[in-house]
Image (cartoon, rainbow, N blue to C red; front, side, top):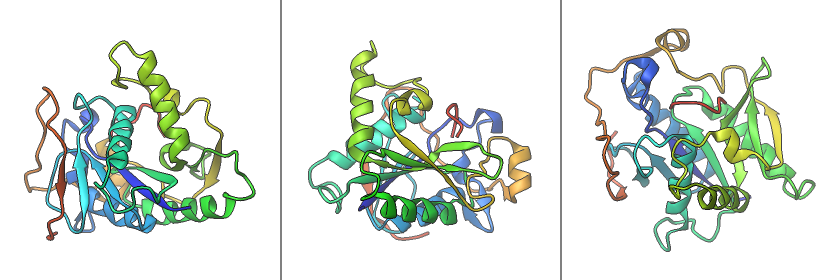
Length: 239
């Protein structure tokens, strides 16, 4: 099943004192860089929902509307970009989308297992809407998963129609995914371990960077842009 990727990288990081998770370092690379490298396993288009920074390879940066609307709103913003005519190379080809929060430094092996499972299960399980990571302790991580694009888009449309605001600001990820037929997939140890606190960061070998990282204003989100330069679950997940 051809798959694109949406990386969630624009949360407030309130439990880190507002330090952007995407800017944190693991083995000399930012968590955003690691997430993009993991997302390239899909061999599809990559959309980052978060502040626009310089990165390697064709990556589309967008913001949810309004900014800081939460992971469900960010997923909706990413799906909007993947539907834009001619905006991304795999448009019309992809039938799946990988969702990946940027704060999981060991996500690449886990995503590889999810992609393999989704590819093998496509024919035997046509009614399945997605595959989500489950760690060794049995904890689900829906922000590390592979979903059928049409099923996810259907749920987004249903919830947007039901919201007075017309968007998914503040909607819990568990609510977005409710009603979908999901398969839980055991992933390699540490694959879905995320950084929500400085204690988590210390345990995973993640440190703060001295380099500045853009933080968007709390007002209306800017229009989306495309970056192609070359240089460098928790359902309540705050990214």
